[in-house]
Image 1 (cartoon, rainbow, N blue to C red):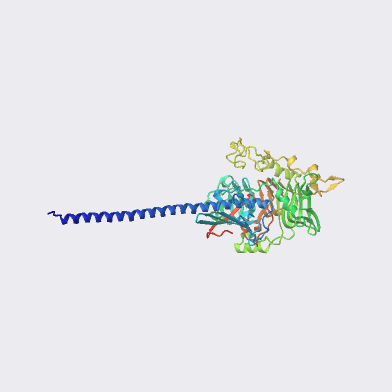
Image 2: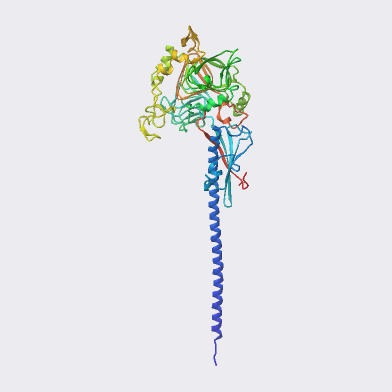
Length: 561
C-alpha cells in the first residue's frame, strides 16, 4: 500500500499558486511598463511635434515678412486699410517654400500664412498670422510689423552721429537729445528732456557720474537717474545714397507731391524729372503772401537754396546741399510758447492732436546743411576755420575705425571688412568712397558753376549774382525737421536762435551769438506711429527695413484660412 504525504501535496500546490500569482503580477507590471513606455514615447513625440510646429510657424512668419517687404517694393500689397488677406492657401502670398510643389520645403509642409493691413493701423503696419501643424499638434503665431519704419533719430530735437557737444551759454533743450558716442557739456545748459549717449556723458571731457553735480540744469539736472542714460545703444542713421524709392513716391502723383509758390507749381514731384543733367537744383523764397507750399514727398536731385515763409506738410529730399539763406518760418505754426515736451503726457498728446493740420516740413539732405552766408568771412572763420571743430578738420573716413565715430579708441586700428580686406577706413555715408575732410572750394562755396545748376537762382546780366546778395548770417529761426548724412554748419548771428523741430547730423557746427533754443516738435516722435489718428505721415527716411512691434501666440488655428 502506497501512502502519499498530504502535507507535501499542500506545499506543492501552494508553490504553484505562488508562481502563478507572481507571473500574473509580472505580466501586469510588464503591460503597465509597456503602456507607460508607450505613453512616454507618445508624449515625447508630442513634445517634439509641439516644439517643431512652433518653429515651423515662426519660420513661415519670417518668410512671409520678407515676402511682404519685397511686395511693398513691387507695389503689389493691398491698399492701406484693406481687409483683404494675402494667404498661402490660394497662392496670393508668393512664398515659394510654402506653396510651390517644386520648391516646397519638407519642414514647411502643413504651414499656412496670412498678411493683412488693418484699417485701424498705419498704412505701413501689417499683421502676419502663421500656423503650422505637425501630426496632431498645431501652433499659431501672430506678429505685427512696421515696414520701413521712420528712423528713431527723429525722436530727438538734437541727434549727432558722433560726439554730441553743447558748449556755450545759454542753451535750452526742450525735449530729448542723443549722440552715438559721448555727449559733452559746458556752460550748464538747460535740459528739459531725456539725454542718451552711446558712451559717456561728460563735462568738459571729464566723465559725469550720477550722484555728483550735473553739468546741466532743468528736468534732467533735477532727476538724472530717470533722464540721463549713458551707454545706450547706438541708433542707425538713415542712408540717403539711393533716392529711387523717394523718386518713385514723388512721381506717383505729381498733383499731390510738389512745391507751389502761391498758386504756381514750381516742382511736380521731382525737379527736372530726376535727371541730374542741367539744372537739378532749385532756389526758393517764400513770403507771407506767397509762401513756399510743400506737399507730400518732393525730390530735388541737386542743391536747394531756401529762405522765407514755408507752409504745408511733407518732406524735401535734397540730393545735394541745403543752403538756408535766411530765416525759415512756418506760415501756420503750432504754438510753441509752452514746449510740448515739457507738458504732461496728456497735455502733450492733446497738443499733438490739435496741431494735425498746422505746418510741418522736413528736409532730408544727402549732402550737408549750410545756414547763413557761406561766402562771408564771419561764416568761414566760425564754420570752416574754427580750430578743431571747423569743417576743414572733420569728415575724414580713412581712419574712423570699426564704429565709424571720429575720435574713438578704435581709430587707426585696422578691422576686417565684408570684402575680406583690413583697413582703418569706415564708409560713414555709404557712398563707397574714402571721403576726406570738407573742402571749402568744392564742397561748400556757392560758386558760379554751382549757382548755374540751380533753377531760379537770381542773375544779373545773365550771370548768377553773388551769394552775399541773397544770403545773410543774421538769421535766427529754423522751423522744420532738418536731417543730413553729413555736416550741419549753421551760423546764426541773431540775438536769439530758435530751432522748432529737430536737427540731426553726422557732424555739427552750430555757432550762435547769445541764446540758442532747441524746441522739439512732438508730432514727429515714433511713439505716435502706432496711432493712425495722431500720425502725420511725412515720408521721413527710414533707418532699417523692418521693426517687429509684437509677437504673440494665439489659440491654435487648425482650420487654415
